[in-house]
Image (cartoon, rainbow, N blue to C red):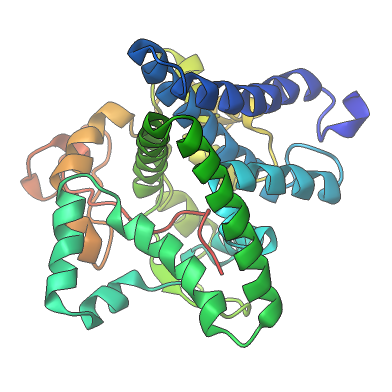
Length: 343
């Protein structure tokens, strides 16, 4: 069993997470169908959490950090994409897009939603802004809508046929769930909203990279300024907690983002140790605990949609430009940069 996994110590933690995700997702949906409201609430939380784990397992699989073989990682990543709906895009496309984020040191996106919103009717733009103000992740839904729309506008019959099959299976599955319990559909929608909100919160504050919109497979133009120092200084580890590091396992240690960028193939369960090895026990300037970011996430939720950059981040103990809200007060963050959307 140990020889299957990327690291010899990976069998127990990876098996535990994979089984929890698969079984917990099914159990969460089952809880949504039961008559007791408290069980429905538990089902929402369990379903949302396993959706989060499925996404971060895709992330580890794209770096071949779970299994030794690339094919095994790709198979697990594909299974996880079916759980959280990322299967609307091809897994190969998701993987290539995310790896370009590392190689190009940019937030690579395949759909420039800002250009689309600026070019759409004013009333539609206002609807998106109103939804985002109300904490409805309209931009993320636009990104997923683009993933669905592109194959139908393409001359590639194979990608169009694949998407039709995927949509048919997922619509049938949701139809069956609604037939068993219409209330379960509402519970699943709430769980999916929680899932997207957690991922977009984590994504928002992990980089101050420029956004590079392209559907080309070619690398971004070379820029000598985007070197290793640039990568470090524009990457942030938005830890859930420093004193209780086990809390970061709630999001599969994804917040140890600087450590991940130093060694992308390091498995999720080794990232805390790598973080300590790289930066010691003293707080690194690139660490921003999530409690420092909640106010910024709320305050800039509309400005973030059209912001040209991610804003300013102060050093530890500093407030940039004398503004309010501490070092993260002017950290606007990014939106629409999820590794789950690609074409």
